[in-house]
Image 1: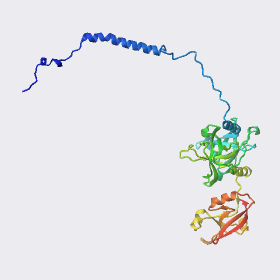
Image 2 (image 1 turned 60 degrees about the vertical axis):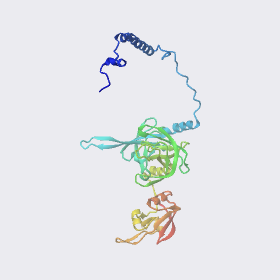
Image 3 (image 1 turned 180 degrees about the vertical axis):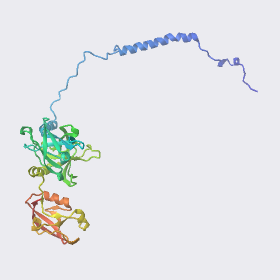
Image 4 (image 1 turned 90 degrees about the vertical axis):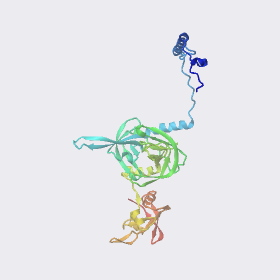
Length: 391
């Protein structure tokens, strides 16, 4: 039997509360008053009549603080750019093609790059890869005048090319030549070029490493290359790398980048190579190489024959300076090697392990110069003097 009553009146403490209409009606004026005050305050602040005006018609610009003199290194950088930029040029390369369906000839842009005035005769030096795919070239000088250019000579093994323009001498300001043999890591350098078509852009950095090696267009190594952290991007190719005296110390050539954009490592062909190669290109249109007058076996064949290092002489023509010095080539009867030729292992004090080593060692000398050639014959080491001839 339940102990709870079924009559609500037995529980007066739990009786329900009912809304009072009179009390709710009395609250409405107060609520409307609060909202009205809030609206008026917001309007007053927005109108700028609040505490502290938002606008001051009498306000004037702040005074400029005097800068003072430029820092010494800033002034030096400005002077380097001011002196060198008139020597830097913008190169555009294009190709002329004939339509397959008409006799019309149209021009296709092939690329842009940088170069610099080499002398007052109008010679312009740049990278070969800047101009190699074109059949027509145009050079824009610092004064924005444009000149048609012709290719004077190329050096594919060094990625160098020389152009010629017929501009008046007063428009031609050659860069002062420096040397790269005494460069030091940490030395300041300055690159001027036309990255992404933005003409005469200056970037600064240091020589971050020396003695680097990169590959040329012929896949032959270019040795003693300068590594720099001065920003180099597409379009900088062929532009000058300058030292703090404003002298040319290299030609910006390549970057090390998985994306093709600057990541902090750029390479420049040293100016000592430029000074050795460019005069030949101007005189002869090609590089005149000193040589022994011999034909060498490929490195692959040499290693297949069990020769671990050195360059095997395949042929020694009888009228060559090598033959006059007593060097022997390989003797072959039919398809059988009867006698291996001499194996060159040193030129002067330079070790020779392969064909590239031999070429680089010989290029350090001049035509007509006599060099010491160390070679192996029948396993024994010999040395002979050979006078180099032009190849």
